[in-house]
Amino acid sequence: MTQIQKLAKSQLITEYQQNKRLQWMVLLIICILAISLLKQFSDKIGLQSNQTQSQLDLLARLEKTAQHTIDGNIITSINRRYSEWLESLPSAASASVAEAQALTEIEQNIGKLLKRKRLNLLGSEQLAGSKQVIWQVRVEIAGQLDELNLIELLTHFDNTDKHARIASFQYSPKTSNSINLVIDVIYKRANNA
Image (cartoon, rainbow, N blue to C red):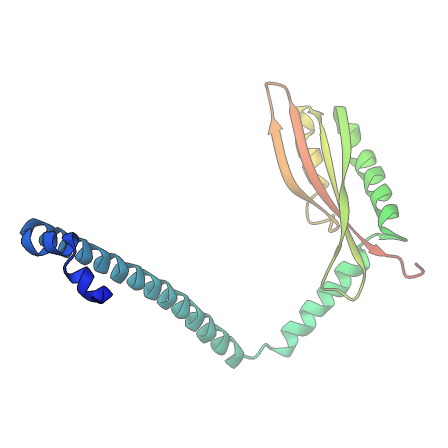
């Protein structure tokens, strides 16, 4: 007797052939598995379809952008403003000198407004995308600021100061007058460095 014949005469097959409820349950399980597989394939195809559509949308936007030319006057104006901004940046011989200068500058300009101040150098990084080496020095300042000095503090970061910006600002007036600032100060490498 071969294996197939033994299997055909086994008690399991005999029970299956005689029990209608068992046949319906097996059929139901097969249907549930088939529906589950179809759902899984449908979800995968839907995800790939969405990804393909987003790529096609991006391609359409890029092609549309490529069709538009940028006016030479705009490019010249942007380059001129960038050069002016670069010239207005303070210079430093190295990243560590830039860090020291940032701490000194913040202490002189903002430190006098705070009580119980604490300055922490969070680090510096070289900014990419420029031929000129530019460092961004990040400093955290914590302390107490009188409400009347808030405007004076913020004037250090208006449009006249193009090399310092506020990255994070938390102020709790009335209760404790506590302030927590994270400031980015930008320096360029000195020409002789």
